[in-house]
Amino acid sequence: MAVNHDGAMMVDSRFRRFFRSIVAAPECLLCAGAITSEHLICRGCQADLPRNEPACLCCAQSLSVAPSRICADCIEKPPPFDRAFAPFRYRGAVAQAVQSLKYNANFLTADWLGEAMIERIRLRAEPLPQIVIPVPLHRARLRERGFNQAQEIAKVVARGLQLPLEPNWARRTRSTIDQIGLNAVQRRRNLKGAFAIDGRVAGLHVALVDDVMTTGSTLTELARACRKAGAESIELWITARA
Ligand SMILES: [Zn+2]
Ligand SMILES: [Zn+2]
Image (cartoon, rainbow, N blue to C red):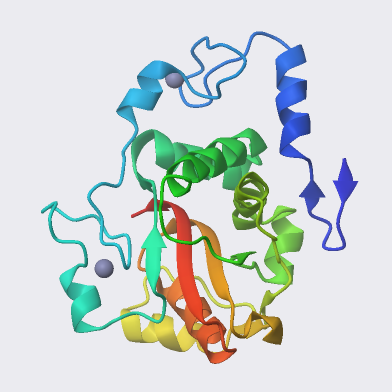
């Protein structure tokens, strides 16, 4: 196990897989039922996953009518990113998995969530982004948690798609207060200028990775900062959309 300069654990997902294969009989990550070693979740859980379909191509918000591809919110007020993709909705077993990564440092969950994203992203015809940037945590939060869950997922996705991962190209310049209980205007004010972006994003097609997107205020502000730094095209890759 290596430790990076932020003190975050950098355990390789291939090592986790190997370790899991040599210890006791593998269990489904979501229900603890018996499974074969090459899978992370069982067939029952796979069938019950809260898939985010149909969803807005721009913001990944779930849509009730299949034929409409862009939601009314995005048409009325286009966000500073070009598209968003989230394979799951933030509920049930997926919400539990996301929390288990964040609060119990269950890194196998990052492998599973990352692989579920890769599976879907590989199906697309459009060109892939040129770089992957995880949503950063402030240094104080990173020290407290020991890892950045968005970075753990981004690592799996970037490796799987053979894209460069640039976790240091976006930094939180200050610690923001918890967004819970703030209205849209307060959220925007709370996050304004909270991100510093490396100038190397200029002219690039960028994917910003996070575990969950709820109101989207953090990702919107980060995308806005990337746009300001000259990013040509911005996609959001989120494992679960609330
Ligand atoms: Zn299961
Ligand atoms: Zn939308």
